[in-house]
Length: 182
Image 1 (cartoon, one colour):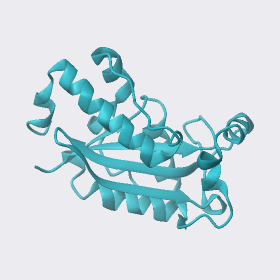
Image 2: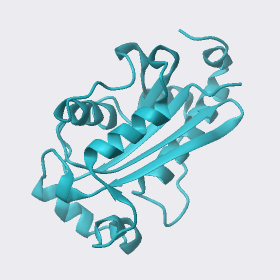
Image 3: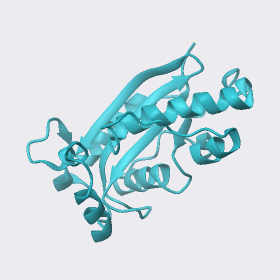
């Protein structure tokens, strides 16, 4: 079975819709569990977007592991355009066949769409593809279970959120969401 649901999580330097992205994590998932993964750390020298002093101060209070993405020489950093191109490739060439999930309707996906516009690119999904985890979690009575030491790592967060969606779908008995495309 092809996994058409994709959980995306970002780490950013602001909470505004035009925030600077510093990491993108994505994982494909479905009723059988987690699938293919995508992770990119953005070189802030080649990033776009808003930087907020309060968000930077918040990052300074996070664990050393979480702040590791900001260390000079961090492995495999990418220009924002390359990170977005990688995400486009990960999503695939059938935007009408995917559903993209973000943890909250006003954060990850709007920020990504702003970055795509800033790089003169179109998001690789249509407006009907967008899903919100917080609504599902509340309706299903589930919580995200983060492994210790992995908070604020975009890929680890995306994986934990996808597993919570699977638990939420089970709790609601809503298996039909994986039966056919919208």
